[in-house]
Amino acid sequence: MTGRRAAGCALVRALPWLAPLALGCSGMNTPVYFPSPTMPALAVDGVATMDGPPRIENGLTLQFRNPTMQEQKTLDTQTAALGFEVPWIQRDHVHIEMTYQVTNTDTKAGMWNIGVDGANEYTKYDENIVAMTLGMGNNDPPQYIPLIPVTPQVLGPGQTVSGTVREDDFDEAELDLDAIGRWMAPFNAVLINNSQVNPVGLSMVPANAVIPALIEIDVSFSADAAMKCDYDIRVRDDNNQLLHDTVNTLFSPAPMLFVPPAMM
Amino acid sequence: MAALATSWLLAGASAARAQVTAEPASAVVFPDPNKFARGLYTEGEIGAVAFFGRAGDTVSPGFAVGARVGYDVFRWLALQAHFLGSTHQLSDGAGALSGQLLQTYQAALEGKLTLRFGQASIFGEGGIGVARLSTNALYVLMVEPQYRVGFTAGGGAGADYHSLSRHFSVGVRGDYLVMTNLSSSQELMATTYLRYTF
Image (cartoon, rainbow over all chains, first blue to last red; front, side, top):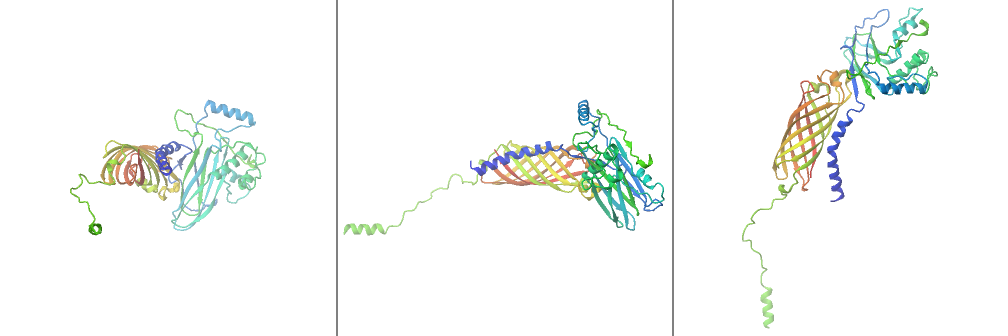
């Protein structure tokens, strides 16, 4: 048998193994999608008020299972070794992404804006609370600072635009939320600055801190024309922590609402 | 003088020729299909998978890679197992999920009937199997009433050309399947393959 023919035989004999291999790999790190709570998720009529353009919010809470006894034991060991609490739902193992689609249903062009807030297992961030703080003592329209801002865009009548809030955007937001929730970071400094460009305010966060992932995602949508926004949440769950089976119990933390210092 | 006359006579004689007195008992057919290998075989295939119906509104056609392992019970009948994976992108009809990737993994048991014409043959095949989707994207879009796994059934046809080697052949095929895990949806597989018979 010549070398070329032997190689051909080996290739053809190997092919039947490729499909089962693909089947076996299919369960690896595949995303799970969650639809926005109602369809259409968010819709505004474009009629402005004293508080600015109309604004609507909704969100969803991701359901995770409780740790097994062995997993809890590991968490406790890590907590004792590090000297601070290690979260069950960690940023390194739960990767979140949001895809959205905005449609202008009006007969005029308008500008839309999306902001994303949320909560980890320790802290909940609500931009409305922050806006109230910033607005105290003046009559200006509220200034919203979301955990993840999406760049506002102008959309023509009848047009549709799609976009993605990427996993690295959520990574940054999860670091910011943990910093302001557990490590007393100044919220405006960490939210306005990208930690990879300017890590101002993050000096209190230990270098070996285990960052919790978001377990609740709240989306706000505003526009100065009649528009609607649909979104979906995409989660990659490395360690199979999402609640799938009824035999598992629901992980039900009670995150504390972040209240800016001025209101306390 | 006598020798010279003899050589002159011989030099003038014409060359002797054979004469066919009867046709061969059977004509030689080349190549002889009876000498093609038969029995256990494997196939590797590449091609495309496209969805129709409701799934076709939200899932774009995608690239497919597959393999078959089969056994020729007779020259005209074979039983085979089929494995195929394909990758797709969700189309604009998927709304906010447009652009997301989706893979399908399918396995089926099939029967295959072959009609041979020398080196070429045509065949028909059909079977039942299972299909699994890599994500729940179609479930979120309410195209998939069940969760990610379901049955498939269908069949197709193709053409095969055998090389002068007794082991190798190549061909093209198309299969049309109904997918029970996708509402009112079907799929078309079109592939080209290389077959090796042991």
